[in-house]
Image (cartoon, rainbow, N blue to C red; front, side, top):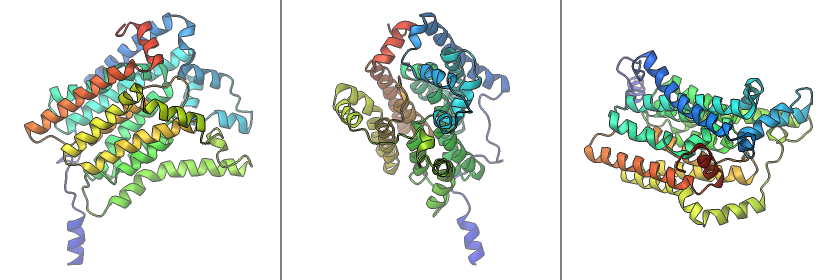
Length: 383
C-alpha cells in the first residue's frame, strides 16, 4: 500500500503535454527564425540610428563601459584581470564581438529577439489566444525601456534572456513536473547572474519564487528550491573560495567592492519617494494587485523581492552606468512566466487590462529616466 501511495503522490497534478513533447511556436522553423529576426532587425535599426548620431552617443552607456573594460583587459594581469572580467560570461563574449559599443548593441538586439520569440512560445503553450498573446508580448517588447536596454546594455539583454527563459522553465518544472526544465532553469539563472552583476540577487529571488507558484507535486517546495537555486549558489561559492585562495578576499572575484554605500542608499530612498519612484514601483503594484485578484497572493511577494533585489544591487555597487529599464523588464517577464492559463472571460479580461497597464507604465516611466529620454530623442522615438 505504501508503494501505491508513493506512486499516487508522484503523479503530477498538471500535464504540460499529453505526449511529452510541447509544441514550438510559431509552428515552423522559418516562422520562429522570422519572429526572432523581425524583432532583432527593428532593434538593430535603432542601434545603427543611435550610433549615427556620433561617438558621443555611447558615452555613459553600459555598452561603452563594457567595451572600454574588456579592451584594456589582459588575462596575464593576475587577480586584477580576473576581477575586471566579472561578470565573466558577457565579458568573455564582449572580447570576441567586434565593433565596440555598436557591436555589443547589435548583439544585444539579437538576444532580445530570441527572448521575445521564446516568450511568445511560452504563452502559446499555455493556450493564450493570439490577441492576448500579442498584448502580453507588446507590454514587454514595444516599450522604450526594453528597446533602450536591448540596444545599449548588452549585459542586461543577455541576462534577461537567460532570466526570462529560466522563469519559463521554472514554471514548467514546478507546475508541470518537467524535471529537465527544472535543471535547465537552475543553470539559466546562474548564467543570468554571470552575465550581469545586477542579476546576482535577482537570480536567487527567482529561485525562491519556486516555493510560491502553483505546485504540481505536494510536498516538493523545498526540493524544487534546491534544484533551481543550487547552480547559482554553487557558482558564487566557488568564486568566493577562489578569491580567498588567492589571498585577495572572499569578494575579490566579484569586483571586490560589495559594500553598502550610504550615499547611494540615501539617493535611492529619495528617488523612491519622488514622482520617478511612483513610476518605478508602479509595475510591481500592478502585478501584486493582479496576483491577489487571480487568487495567487503568495506569488505577489516575488515581485516585491525582485524590486528589492535590483535596489540592493544598485546600493552595493553592482549596477553598471547608464542602466535603465532592468526592473521593468524583470517584472514583466515574471508576470508572463507565472500568469496561469485563463479559463474564464473574466480572467482573460483581467490579464489583458494588466498587460495594457504595464505597457502604459513602460512608456510613462521611460520619460522619467534622463538617459532614456536622450536615447529616444536621438532615435526619434516619441520625440
